[in-house]
Length: 351
Image (cartoon, rainbow, N blue to C red; front, top):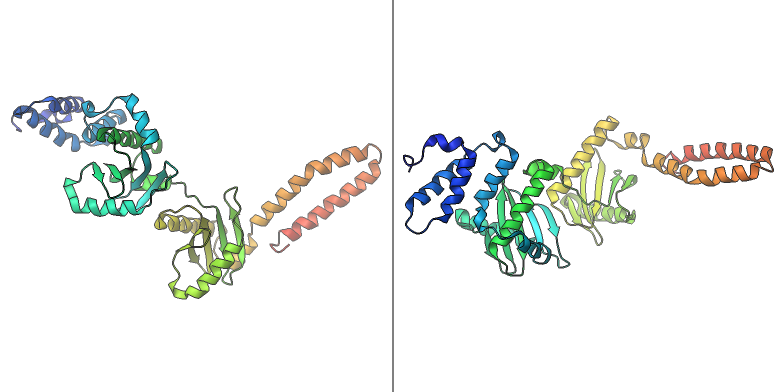
């Protein structure tokens, strides 16, 4: 076979693409086209995609996933995207769920990923792009060691499902500027609702609400009682009655994050570790005294409270000053001095 096709053609990317696509139009017994397919696919897989234009590299990856003439018409894909898939998972090369997108009101449990991974290991190189699990039809492609896994309970044309995943992978790669585990984790939006910092006595020293839905501090009391009861058996990820709790301890300071969305445990803990590192670098250390000395959240609240009162203060000063300027000036000065001492007391962290 190597004598049939010149090895010098291995750098001609467009030629390899054309040869590879043409080889699928052969009929039975046309050995030359089988050899062409083997030759082109071998050299396309060995290409250094960083050395060729991005658009051309994408065509190579797409062709290896699925030749052009196998792909369905574009108008058919709208139905598959909107009505068929229930969920899409992105899995790392170790089977960890890095990203999950539920597409319908019926939530697909992550246990389907564990089933898929066991099946993939057992099948090895014989793994098919479309798999019938006990509960769903699974469509899968692999890009840069990242597995795109889509779940559907509706039977659909296999090539249509694979084409949609290929396009999803292309869009995600363009948006992130690449496609690997580190890039996805760096751009992963973790849905935390709140982060608390607790002292070694369970006191809430710092609180940061991250969404419009406020998490009550009672969750910290529940966590502390649970931590005392568990002792050394306390897990880094805990399912409370209302939230998933992620926790790490640094220098006797507990970082506690709350989420109502299930996420990969290692990813959640990694986020808290990074947050602890950043805070330690910023404060020059990480202990109870340092945090209390640099307590930021009370300053923010005091400042916000003052801003909220400013419009009313100025309006009353203007209206009252028209008839009683001296009285308004004295009362305004008294208000400003009072606000100063109020803010100073509030900033102690125990107003």
